[in-house]
Image 1 (cartoon, protein in one colour):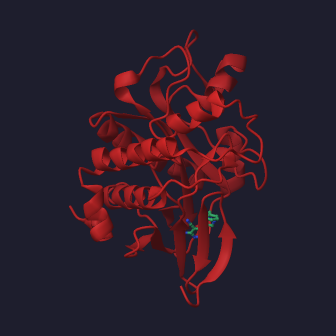
Image 2: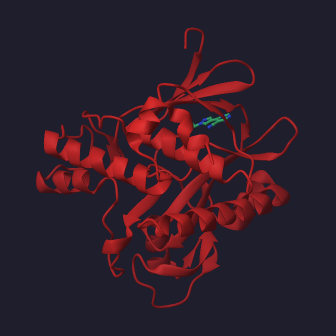
Length: 287
Ligand code: PZK
C-alpha cells in the first residue's frame, strides 16, 4: 500500500494504482441504502463481497477472462489487471424489478426488449435480457437501447459483451438458485486488455452489484425482500428517515442481523465457512 496511488472512490470502495498494469480494489465495510452511505459500518461486509467476487471470477474463467490477479491476506483487497473500461454498464435481468419494472410498466419494453403483456413486478422473465446503461458520473445510470450501447462501444464489442453477460448470468443464477438465492439481476463491467480482448472487471455477482432475493420467500406481484439489506431498509422505514443525506446510525441488532445475512450469502454460495476465508482468503480460488 505504501506507494499505491489513490485513483478514486466509489460509494463503498477505493481504487489505487499499484503500477502501470495493476490496480488495487479495496472494499470497505460501508453500506449504502436508498443511494445514501450510512454512518454505521457492517463489520466484514467488504471481505464478504471481495471473497464472493473472487469466488465467481475463479468459477467463470471458462466463460470469460477476468481482471483478478490476487486476493490479499486482508480479505478485502484485490489486485487486478488494469483495463480500458467500456463506457457502459452491462446489466442482465432475469426478473422484472427496479428500473426494468418501471420502464416495463410505462412502455411494455425494457431497453428496446418488448416483453409479454401482463407481467407483474418481480416476475421471472421468459429469458434473461441484456439491458445496458450509461455510466452516470453523478446521479443515476440511465437505461439505453442496444443500438445506443453499440454506438458507444462498437457493434462487435457490444455483441460480445451481451453474449458474455448473458452466459455469466445464466451460469450464476442457476448455481445460486440451487443454494436458495435468486439473482434477480446483475451488473457487469468489461474492459479491454492491451491486446484488445474483452475482460470482465470490477466486482461481479455480489449483493452490491446484483439483486439477491431469498428464494424461499419469492412472491411475485410486488417488491421482494433483499437478501442482504432488508433489515437496514426495514429499520429506515420504521424510523421514518426521509431517504436523503445524512442517513441514520444503525442500532447493534440491525448491524448484527445484516452482517449475518452477508456471511450467510457467502457461505451458501461458496460452500465455504467464512472463518476459513478470513484465515486464508485464497480458499475461494481453489476448485
Ligand atoms: C476501474 N472503476 C470503478 C471506481 C472503485 C471502483 N480493471 C480495471 N481497470 C481499469 N479501471 C478499472 C478497473 C476495475 N475494476 C474500475 N473505475 C475504474 C471504481 C472507484 C472505486 F473501487
